[in-house]
Length: 215
Ligand code: B12
Image (cartoon, rainbow, N blue to C red; front, side, top):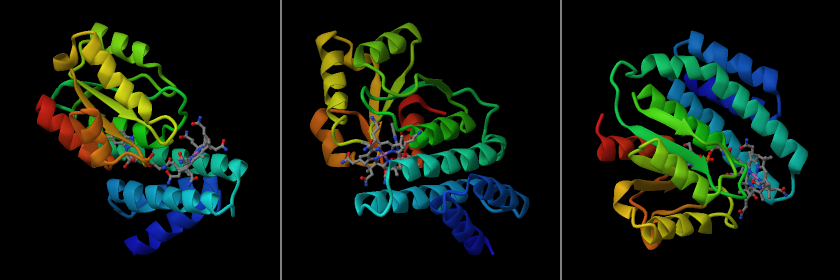
């Protein structure tokens, strides 16, 4: 039953059907399907498929945008259930999230924000296309313990390396844990730029926050 629903959710997103995606997500919640499972095996899987079709030129930018709307809408339906299932009563540390300069992708970052909040972390989400200077300034003035950077483009991931270098230049490298993620990011890349952690998915992002900030 749940596998069938996940397939319907994927089909709705791949079919660019925002209303259908919301409706299936609602039905999933009503039927007791795991909200995180819907995100990872429904929504994320569909977006990976969309990405493959875009690479193969079977889909183009307008379809990419419509699929993102459908994915966002389904995440919106699932959000309250995830927050409710979480452990919001405890207050863990503060995490800053941003998508790096030149990059407008935020669906994965928003899912990470949601999971962090549902795990009791305070999240300061700066949004997309954020310059390294602005990220560092916000991190300093808000006294965050961990900074999570997201990049989805191979042409923007170098911003993460520059961010770590900026922390070193300003003599504040030890003040913040820096974790990186996004589709093109790998553990090797993360190690090579001197980040403190790499998360292949949002669950790993929460594990890193728990490791670095406690929960
Ligand atoms: C949706 C989408 C868009 C939407 C974004 C809407 C939005 N609000 O985000 C729109 C239409 C705007 C878009 C635009 C473009 N896109 Co686009 N897009 C995608 C697509 C299909 C899905 C991304 C997504 O949302 N995935 C679902 C989420 C849930 O997954 P995720 O982001 O990977 O996040 C998970 C993990 O990575 C991790 N994570 C993410 N961030 C972080 C951060 C931390 C700290 C941690 C721990 C974990 C973590 O946790 C998340 C949840 O598990 C990808 C394909 C793909 N497979 O990634 C292409 C893709 C990223 N886009 C691509 C391209 C080329 C573009 C454009 C240049 C297209 C164009 N010609 O204009 C523009 C660039 C715009 C810009 N300047 O950023 C290419 C990039 C290729 C490359 N080599 O860099 C891809 C790979 C498609 C492809 N196969 O060609 N895109």
